Length: 454
Ligand SMILES: Cc1ncc(COP(=O)(O)O)c(C=O)c1O
Image (tube, rainbow, N blue to C red; front, top):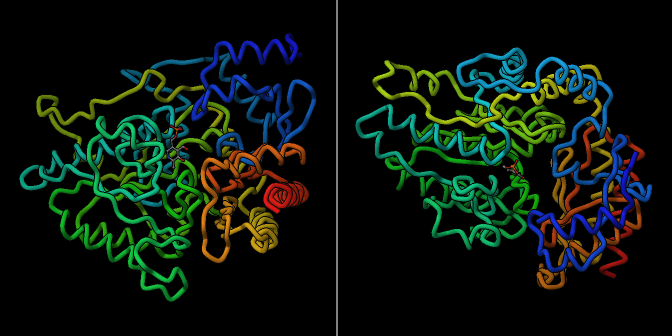
């Protein structure tokens, strides 16, 4: 039951809440939608309006909103234990979940370090990679740097920003960051390496990556990659085989591969993990978002035995990984994650994805013909539609036009909640979405783009 009317809640929000990635002057002048509840693929506002959650609540939702099975698991766990620490104690739920994650993860990842959001999962991987090289000793102690990609996004804490590559978000913080070595983004539509972007492209981006590795191998601890898709950078899909090539290069130059599967993990690319699609085992893997199916904040950094073993020793050797968060391995969040993994099996969710992916692809195909669509990019259940002022020249819309925002506002009239990345319309529905809902989503997006751009 809603205890307050919409206007009261809007007023409270505008008066007291500072929203993420939001120009608050615009926000305060607006009348935001206030979400009251969720039902399957839909969010319902305080006025009873329904919006298909086209961005899966910041890419977290897997089984739809308010799945009774996960609700039950969370409630049962709260009645038994809301939180106890992993500092000095083991816990039932974190132990059970760790085993499930290791069983599902690319083979070779065998230890789970918990935290509570995607940024920390990446920071932990970065710190582990750094400290691993220190423990190796000798000349390996010079391996202190990281290779990252342009357009990468790994979160908003300073370590995660240091390995990010989106100037708009990250530029202002540059003086606070540690320097990283930036490789070109595999952004074929706007290739900066002078490649053709076609099937027979000679992959100059990979050649440049190798060149950087050759120069910096002796001082580089690790490489951080969003496998298959740079999401926040604009849904930039990597060409097939890219991740595999990166793995080979990391091996050749003795650089640890950190896969940030915070966005693409848990079924998004069609298999449980993107690395699995490419037959790759990273040295470290960061997970969050879909881990609890969007229920509660939880993250995990998975490591190989080789990395883990390097931290073992006498206490006096100070090989301990001195890192931890208050809510590390929170049992309620772990219970939600276990219930989500059960639902993957019970609903045979991955088996059902190919039909949904085909339906999404059909929508993207239609949309790709629109006059102001430069490119549609999609892998599995993730997609992006890049809007351009001129298809021929690929001239982008100037950012001041906020074309993406305008399309997403229009989409609300079609019962959709969307959030753009600049000029890119993001398509990221809950994995449990039905075929009818996929069609509803893509039809609404097409109509909204037509309305705003034609
Ligand atoms: C690939 C990737 N890594 C890390 C993060 C950061 O996660 P969080 O917002 O939970 O800190 C995100 C968030 O969108 C992401 O997409």
